[in-house]
Length: 80
Image (cartoon, rainbow, N blue to C red; front, side, top):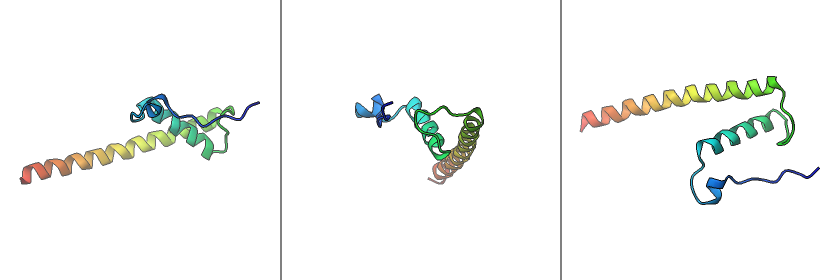
């Protein structure tokens, strides 16, 4: 069996920023790696669930940061 090669997403290879699908795939692959699974190894449902929970926690934290940034931007506009 051949070793998996490092892949560069099509959008990155063309000089564009990664799209949402590229980012999701990269986060899933990295989550699996952290849990000890190789790129081409089957990942048990329990581990997939852990990755999903981590993604959910990340989404919640990012939503808080976006809300805080929005409040700061609003205060800056009002202050000017």
